[in-house]
Length: 194
Ligand SMILES: N[C@@H](CCC(=O)N[C@@H](CS)C(=O)NCC(=O)O)C(=O)O
Image (cartoon, rainbow, N blue to C red; front, side, top):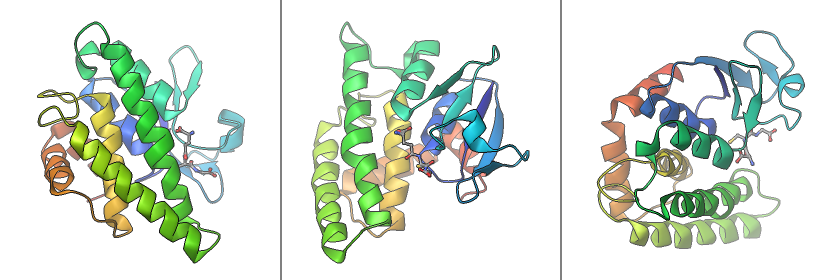
């Protein structure tokens, strides 16, 4: 199994989740500027969408999209999804929120077409980080146990920190808690991050 990633990109969420699940996998770094992998392959031959994350299974099948990959990791390791009958739906709901309402807004902060657009995106992110802080059911999003959604949120909080977006104290405490987890430390180390 292989994870195609770029250091600090959204693929960090999948990287952390795969370590949390105890999966054995190789990592292949992708240069998003040149779209070349570290092994000299053209990345668009591997994923025609030309973006990370991409997971290649042992049988050669490839899976893309954070929501799908994180859901797949939670299927492999059910302890990384919330308990109870609607647990998988609650997970999907949270992953969709992080993907479409938080992750996508960052594009407008990183590459705005105008100052007004960047300001509007920052305001939306501000609101959404407040909303997600209010959703916490415990130390982690769904209670006392970590889930794959926490790995995604942690990655978004690194980005918020990088661009100077202030988040509620609860989210800073959560990020610190995540940093103490061996899976997070391993993924950060593998990606050459802090
Ligand atoms: N819808 C995709 C978006 C993934 C995405 O935005 N990947 C970024 C890195 S965080 C990327 O590879 N961008 C390179 C590009 O679009 O050229 C997902 O959620 O997996």
